[in-house]
Length: 435
Length: 173
Image (cartoon, rainbow over all chains, first blue to last red):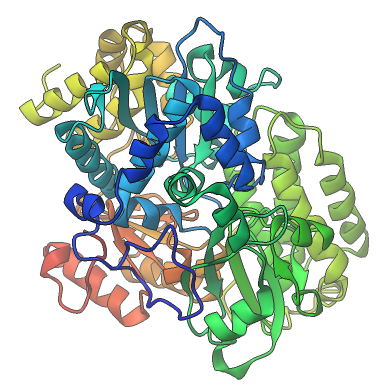
């Protein structure tokens, strides 16, 4: 069961149980390798578990791509404070819809990944922060958690091994900002989702100021396969320094949009043409957002590249959250830039002035441009304003708004110029974006 | 303030999730679920949640002002949310949004005169690969066509429940 047909080019690891009947139930899970990795991990030391995750070269799937094993190793073992595992299921980066599937169709895989993380650092409590709009997923997850308690995979004495771990869901209430780890922790504590200054990082002072492992859903979901099959096996699925597979969310102007699990390093043009069935209506490719709206856009001639963290970074963009948004030749880049900026202006939490004011002014400038009232000097101002936001905020939201804008203005300057002098948008057929 | 037994049971579960001295963590989940029953977040609800979580009403109120799903004004019985963010925009999300506004004669965060339907243009709802997407309350609709949106809005306006409307099926379990 899934929302799009699978592709024969996929390498199903995290998604391998998606098509099984009743894939959410613990019985299906147990009959298909479920909780075997946990069993194996109970016979390993904390160093061995973390070592295996390091060997796998699993990198954070939320967007930053930080090595997961290393992140886990930062949790201080000797701290007298309780330790926490927090799952970031606040999926809201535009273009991204993979965590939804991972929870909906295989919630026990997530629980098992969290359990193994708990073993690795000696945590006894975990929370799954799910965005409020995913109300039905909270139901799916709660049911799975209840099943895990009933079968002794959560509780005070897990499988009679003297291991204690409790897990609960936590509902968000609509805030993109809470997908940022420190804002998520504030929100989990019942406060406004403003980011915290770092250091200290969550590994040292996270949930309730205690040592915390905080990872994306997809990251935790990869852990059972890594423990079961070995870190080397997982690393071998991808490219050097980029282990495993990735849940790529293909959207936009392709014939077969969908979430596809492909090996890390899969070629982007092949993804569009062979997995996605090419561009709709036989049109030409104009550009691709490779990893969610925060990532600098790639022009068509930059898209023949391997989709791993390092190759996309070398192309001056980011692999990000796996949201691959494909744009055809008829897309108005001014309108696209404006829509991205409207989003960030709406979602800026207001904590840092460069982000709060920067996104608001950029939205105004881009709106003016899109409505044909732009001035030549505005093109420079859009770039200047964006660059002045970079690196000047507590969390990356400011950068996330600035980076795609800078790239769009640099790479499609001629489209901005085509909107000058009261000329109508060359791509527009009627409707205008409301500011 | 009294709530339904179901909501009271939920509150009890929420408060048990967090360490005893961290009841403030339950503020947001409580508000999200309570507003479905009380129709909006009232001052009375704010004070009740504050009392139960051991914080001041102001600490609850400042949270209400931050999160986009928390609302002090009642929404329609059916809250229709149309995504116009990038993935939806590229495949007709904006056209769906304009169509909905035109058809109902209301705009962003407005409610029809009979209180049945309210509209909101929302940011990315996590259905990008199955765009354009619409949410009615908490249910997702994928690959929505203008024809389906018409049927959905007509049906809701005519007093039908979403599941009674032909050719428009919510996804997910």
